[in-house]
Length: 219
Image (cartoon, rainbow, N blue to C red; front, side):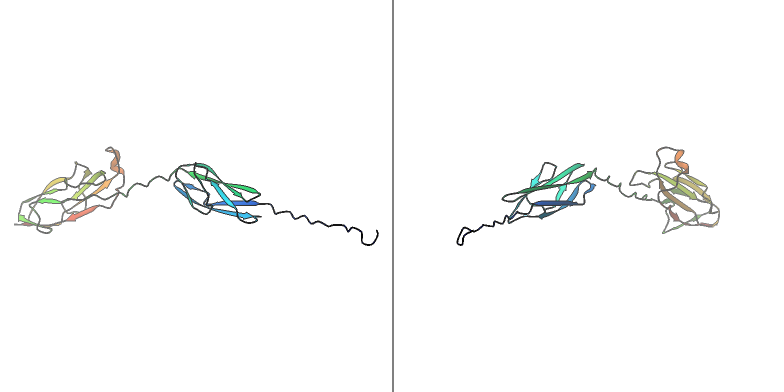
């Protein structure tokens, strides 16, 4: 080639990196209502880019970092579309929402006992002349949860509950005391049952609430 002739040109071709998007959901499953935080990682973006979000439940947005609440059970594909001046990329993540967890029942409440005696006790002492007749009554006891009630009474003070039974059966009894001092006791609790006598063998829902008296029968 002669001196001063044309020189060869060399050209460099620069290829822009490929735009890519990866997304994740935390948590990706759970019972409704479920609030999900999404994470979007974008690679290869040259300059500014925009994001379009389709949460899969009919709602859309443009902020990938904004938490989203799913109110109904279902499987949702949350999709994220990233767009630059020359490229776009898309990723999606599955969010599985289960039916709402059942509401736990309120705690069961104990009965509200009402203990009455005739003659009326002064404090817990009942005094009278022997033979002394005392009426013991728990029939005004109520249960706030409408559970069946179970009563028991030890009126002869031998440590054995000689009267016991369900609602309305053994809530009222009388006893005649000879001269002396006695310590009768009456108790109530609630039981969870719908029919008698099937309820008879079921354990109480709460501990028995009891009231003891000092009966003084004077000669």
